[in-house]
Length: 273
Length: 292
Image (cartoon, rainbow over all chains, first blue to last red; front, top):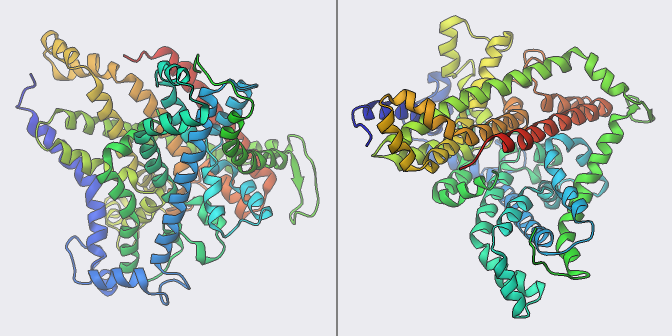
C-alpha cells in the first residue's frame, strides 16, 4: 500500500493549490464588505469589514447612482431567464433530434447527420457579426428570444444524447416493438424516463453555459433592459466596493450549482468527451 | 445507428424539425453570410459592394497585426495548456493520494471551473490595477511592472488571468482519469518498481494519455475562444494589439471597425483551424491512443 510518510508533502502541495484558487476570491469578498473610502485609502483587504449589508443591498436594489436604469436584481432575473431558456430549448430540441437520428430509418441519414454535427466546428464567437445582422433582420435584438435562440443553435447537447441512446441495449426497442409500441409511445414512456439523469446533467451543464455567456449578450443588447449579469460586470460603474460585491454575487449561481450538484455537473461535462 | 429502427413516413421529421429549423435560421444563414462577406469588398459606409475573390484573405495575410494576433494566439494557447495541464495534473495526483480531506480539496479546487471567463477577467483587473493590485505591486517591486507599455508584462497579465480557472478543469479531468486506473495495475507496479517518481512516469502517466490528449484539445479550444471574455475585461489587446487573440481581433475588426470583409475572412481562417484540430483529434488521437 501507499507509504504514509510523504502525505505531509501531498497536503502541502494541495494547500498551495487551494491558496491560489480560493484566496483571490476571498480577498475580493472581504474587500466587498468595506466602504469604498476605506478601500481607496488602504487597498484590498483580507479581513471582513462592516459594510456587507449596505453594499450588497445597494448593488441589488438601488437604481440610481449605480446603473442608469437597471438594478443588479433585474440583471440576475435576465440571466436566469436566459440560462433557463437556453437549457430548456437545447434539451428539448436535442433530445428529439437525437431520437430521430438514432431510432429511425431516414432518407439521406448521412447528410442530416453531417448537417447537424458539422455545426460543432463553428462556435458562436466565429459568427457573431452575421448572427447579429440576421437577428436584426428578424427584429429579435433586445429580446429574450434573441438572447436564447442563437446560443441554443448548437449540436453539443444532441451529441450527448446521441451517445447516450446508442448505449441503450437494442433489446429494449425489440421488446417494445413486440408489444406493439409506436415511436411516440416509445419516446415518451421508455426513452424519456430512462434519460432522466442524462437530461438533468445536460440541463445544468447548459444552464451554466448559458449563464456564463458574455460576448453574445454584449453585442445583442443595446438597451439596458436586457443586460445580463456577466456582461453587466464590465459595463457597470459605481464605487469600488459595490463593484466587488457585484463580482462576488455574479459567481454565486454557477458556483452553487457546482457545489450542490457536483456529481451531475461533472457527469454533464464528461459527456463532452 | 441501431439495427432495429422505426420505419415511418413522417414521425422522424417531426423529431428532427425543431433542431434543424433553428440550425438553418440561426446558424447556417449567418455562416453563409460570413462566406459572402469574406469574398466581397465593401466601401466604408456599406453602400456598395463587389465580388473580391481572395482579396480579403490576401489582405489579412499581409496585415502585420493579423500575424501578431496569430503568433500571440498560438503562444497563448501553448502556455495556457502547459501551465494549467501541469498544475492540474500535479494537484490531481496529490488529491488522489491523500487519505483525509479528499472531498474538501476536490470541492474547493473545482468550483472556479464554474466562474465565467469575463468574471475572472474583471477580478484579475483588480489584482493588476495600479491602485489596489496586489500582483501589480508585487511585480512592480520585483522588476518595474507596466503592462500598458511592456509586452512581456501584458503577457504575464493575460496568462495569469487566462490560466487561473482552467487549472480547475484540468484538475477535474486528471482526477477522474486517475481514479479510473485500476487498483490492481497500481498494486502490481508497486511490487515491480520502488521509486514513486519513476512509477508515475512509466506506469501512471502513459495510462493517463487519453485524458491528457483530451485536455490538450479542451485547453486549446479554451485559449482560442473562451478567453475572449478575459481579454475584453483585462488588456483589451494592449499594448497596441500585442495581446489580441484571433477571435478578439475578428470581433474588433468586424464589430468596432465595421470591416466585414476582413472579419469574414478571419472567421473562415478560424474555422479552418478548428477543422484541423478536430481532424487531428479524430484521426490521430482516437486512432493511436487505446482506451482500456
